[in-house]
Amino acid sequence: MLKKDARQKVIIDLIGKYDIATQEELCELLEKEGYKATQATVSRDIRELALTKMPSDKKGLKYVRISSPSGAMEEKYSRVLRDGFVAMDKAQSIIVLRTVSGMAMAVGAAIDAMHLEEVSGCIAGDDTVMLAIREASSVDTLMAKIRDIVNP
Image 1: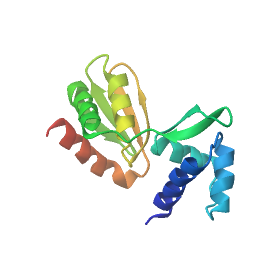
Image 2: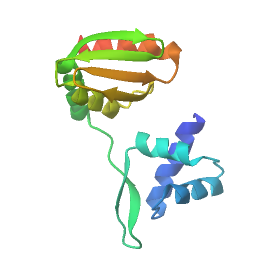
Image 3: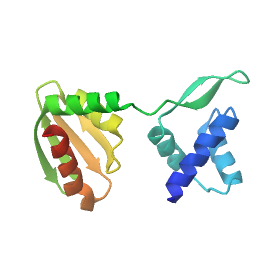
Image 4: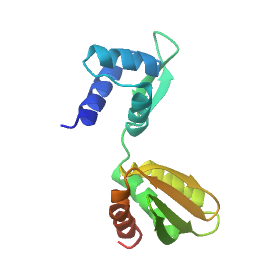
């Protein structure tokens, strides 16, 4: 098991046991479990695990996990990408997606919701989405994934 996967499993366990309200609290509890994690790492884990805050019985708010998207939701995201997609190009470690006018924000949101491991983030305009790729070596792999989604 990768260190990240193990840490994220511990995070799920911790939020199930304790009412954790802040990233700092989560960092402290992770450290007690033997995982040294920065606030930035915990923030990424929270996003990747789809954690959100809800009212707690004991104090203000606590982190909880939103159930992972069902197959139906994944298909909806894929459909938004397919419906909005026009063309794709690469520029070093950036992928530029051209979309139908007015669809870039929806396509960008769909890409974000898919939690593609290669994507660090995206910026959407009216008809263009720029995907920042974590490693330049992953660009072609991600482009192939996107082609498979838009041309099933």
